[in-house]
Image 1 (tube, helix red, strand yellow):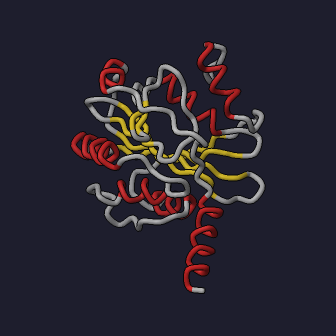
Image 2 (cartoon, one colour):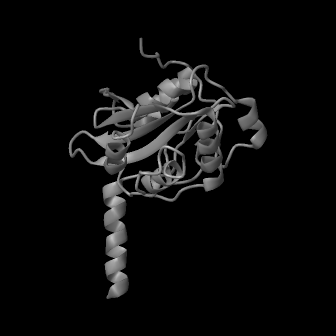
Length: 211
């Protein structure tokens, strides 16, 4: 009986947290491919939290974050399902996050059934570098554990220690909103639910960046 209760609790958390994972993990890119794609974004170091929210229920569906450090800009996308050719991925860390790739990543998640809550905070360069190191050392994340992984990395960083580790994307986003210096926007689009269409457009160069 106890095992059944624990199993039901775990399934409940997975259903609410809603993080997706590909049915079949693609092989990791090589370190050489990741290094060749490296992109360092000009301007201040920053961390951007993405929260995907179901437009019908308001429930959080996924958490991830973009980390812009002096060395490079990456996205930690634990248990994520948006992957594209030309964007190397190793253990749920995406490399080569140019402006075009960042735009694609955001828009691939914003569609008729989901919106994206985007929260950005500037951080000291050493904090951003630490965030990348923690994401890289975390390892691939299992289904429904995206927010656990994202919040677990964040709360190890100076300036983020007040954040509680949580399973729930909206809870993490609401905590993030209380930090000094956070800016926020919400991205809504009316694309079809099939994210593979956005991936195909990006890979063929058919995607048009936002004006």
